[in-house]
Figure 1: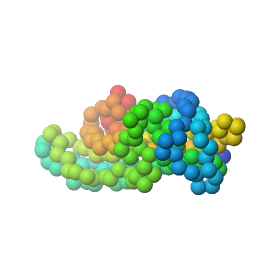
Figure 2: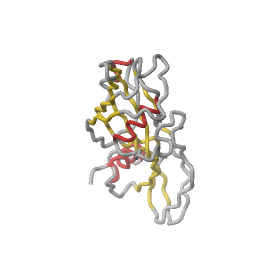
Figure 3: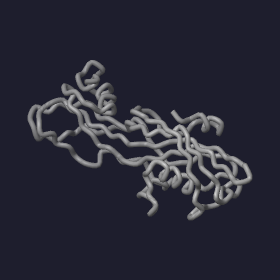
Figure 4: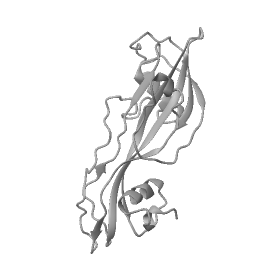
Length: 213
């Protein structure tokens, strides 16, 4: 995971719990000054260069319900999804880093989440809360033993912000893009690593849904 630089800043930050398939890459991008704000500890230089490393895009399991059996199709599941983990939008950086929104905007553009026209909803909003659980009822169209789960597609990365004079600030940024509500049937295999993780928790490690197909 991309915590090497963050560890130098008093510990790693990120989602707690959950796992997923993460892909890593390393990219550099020049920072734009539009919309940049002064850092809290010291004013960031203008026109610095971001270098992004250890970029990861894991899917994080946020919660699962207990397994629930329906004897006929069309019944509504009643077991609630209980929270296992959370996710946040944040930047942890040393003195002289740009404001969090500017950092997250650079990250969003680097991974293609933000285009030249501006921000996608919420990606740079440090006040955005983790997705709500249990937002709707689910009625499977078959009998079986079911588990509901919730997840989120997270993004995290380390960065260096380098000024023209050579001054460099390091940091770690994290956000999330898409919330996921899922359902699985314990006796059926699934191609989703996140669903398999939920199945191991609620169906049992020996269940068909918990095993790789």
